[in-house]
Length: 105
Image (cartoon, rainbow, N blue to C red):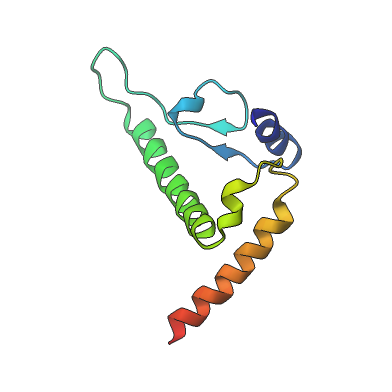
């Protein structure tokens, strides 16, 4: 999986926003900056970076939750992220249509 993420970062200029478990994964994988172990607080710039990262990740996580909740088949896909793009795009379009229809009523 990390190979696909590094490929996307280098070939498509598409960075990955990851949680702390991916710290040290390399270029293109953005993770939160850890709190210093000596008890000092993070610099305000680093706290802002972490807050922005959390906010952006939350949007992606929510979108994926909507897609997988609506399209159960996406929970069982084991193909490479590069190969499932068309399936996810189709599910996303159908989800947008469905949500637009339910919001207007």
